[in-house]
Image 1 (tube, protein in one colour):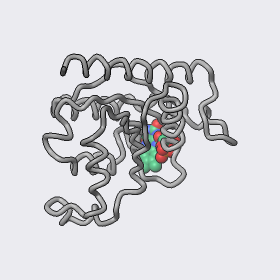
Image 2 (image 1 turned 180 degrees about the vertical axis):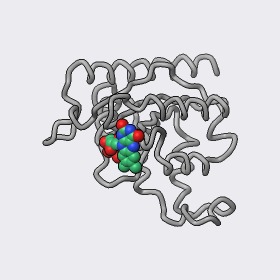
Image 3 (image 1 turned 135 degrees about the vertical axis):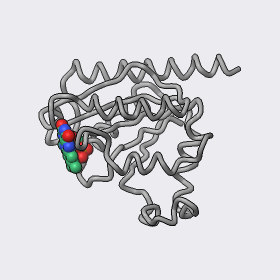
Length: 184
Ligand SMILES: Cc1cc2nc3c(=O)[nH]c(=O)nc-3n(C[C@H](O)[C@H](O)[C@H](O)COP(=O)(O)O)c2cc1C
């Protein structure tokens, strides 16, 4: 399963819209198995300090989703020049080292401003390089996101941008299949 991670828990988030469209590209267009992993559905008990020692039972599905994922597409918005705090907090609760080591990861970023979340993706790349993940080098940056989404459907409509997202998805699937061959 490829997990498409919605990198914020903000209600009405544009990240969730883009992640949903990406999940459809993987499943409907490319015939891959993919599912959304949405930080808005994290169990509230995860935010108690005691969760570092004792994970809430409801976190088990998130834990399993990461550990069982063939690949992870992180869709991150830019919040104050970095990733949302909830995304880093979620990562800090992953099972170490299994969740990180050799985990194939792919990045899509979006921002209201002109950078398309270059900085959050650089910050995530540093974290996952430190933790020995296998990072797909082709990133997608979506700047000025409020101008890119159709208000009625919440989807990216610009043909060139959609083609870029599709190309990344095809490339990530190829990356995953090459990694599988290397492991066997
Ligand atoms: C707390 C917060 C901080 C933000 N900081 C930035 C920023 O530093 N740069 C930027 O371009 N947009 C920033 N934004 C706007 C988001 O990039 C924008 O809301 C975009 O739609 C993606 O986030 P969303 O998934 O929450 O909608 C910020 C939004 C929030 C909620």
